[in-house]
Amino acid sequence: MAIADMEAVILAGGMGTRLREETDIRPKPMIEIGGLPILVHIMRLYRRFGVKRFIVCLGYKGNVIRDYFVNYRLHNADLEIDLSTSAVRVLGDVAPLDFTVTLVETGADALTGSRIARALKHVRGDTFFATYGDGVADIDIASLLDTHTRSGKLGTVTAVHPPSRFGEIDIEGHEVRTFREKPQIAEGWINGGFMVLRKAALASISPSDGARSLEVDVLPKLAADNQLAVHRHGGFWQCMDTYRDMTLLNEMWASGKAPWA
Image (cartoon, rainbow, N blue to C red; front, side, top):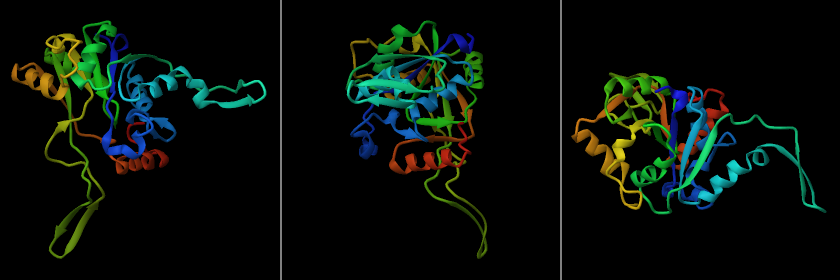
């Protein structure tokens, strides 16, 4: 299937409890990096490879996401407001997002597998991308799809090396030979999101069942049935779980050297 014919399903319904100072007022995918929600950064990553349709699974504070996309120009343009009449005039314009966004209410408390199952009615083809609304990477989406297609399996996950929280030093005798600040861990792989799935991968989940998890009920079963392929990504990957992560991503963006951009 051509990338341009596929949708990317983005999980954006969780509470993000480890970022409570931010998520008390907005869902985690709406936390900004360089003035744009991380959700938009993720969409732009896919769009560079030809994906034009996005399906966002809403839950916690979903109306914040609805408001942002419905009023995208108002959120990003200069405005003139006549307070005597409440008339609003957009001054100039903003660069449009040249893709479509389908916002799906998937429930306040539903787990990840159930959210995707409830969104499948909006997926036009048999195969779709899926990812979380809180992580960015310099991943090659076309290569990911190629890995999935060649595997012939129901699902493909991207395996990544998580970044270390600490600096790494290479010691020789009493001297430090090299020092790397918070490098990607060389050993060990984790699920970095950026998945490709066929609808049959979620066939066992009823949309009425909100208690099914992608990570517990879907991916382990696919692996046990030899239906889960892996795409190894050794480059940059960073999730936004904590305030520290948010600060790091904003610093990368401000430097003009954000790897995912």
